[in-house]
Amino acid sequence: MIARALAVGAAMLIASASIAVPAGASANPEIWSWGPIYSADRAGKAKGKVLLDRPGFVVSGGLYDFPGRTGCSWLQLRWVKDGGGEGRKTYRNCSGAKPLEFSLKTGYMLSVEGRVCRGTARKITGNCSVWEGVWAQGG
Image (cartoon, rainbow, N blue to C red; front, side, top):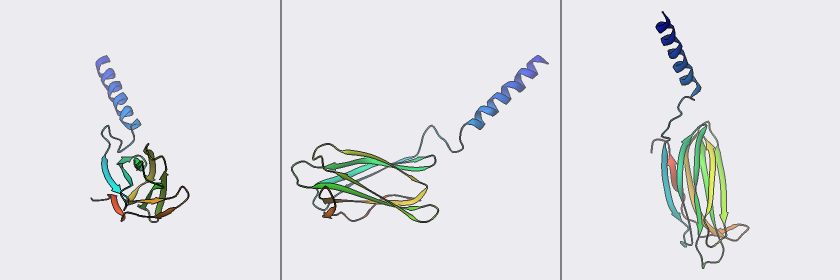
């Protein structure tokens, strides 16, 4: 009788522990690499990863501004949201040596694209790459 009570108690403890873990959480998250994407004059570069996390996706990486070139490197990201609509984010690096590390939570999305441009410290002036796919649902 005592052994049965202990077994039932252990089963309840295991069941309650499994309820505490969020659905879909995994010890091995899904990660995709993207890039590199170079500006048209090859003076700037971006590359990184897309991580499926709760709640949604995180796009992260580095934006590089190569030394010996005038101006700054710019990364533009645009994504299509799962529920409709779009998101956009722009990053700038004028260091000429040190990469700018970034992390962007996009929520659930259908796809994300990026391009690298050159510009001043205030705005993009040109030499943009074409929009390149960073990640898309279904490949």
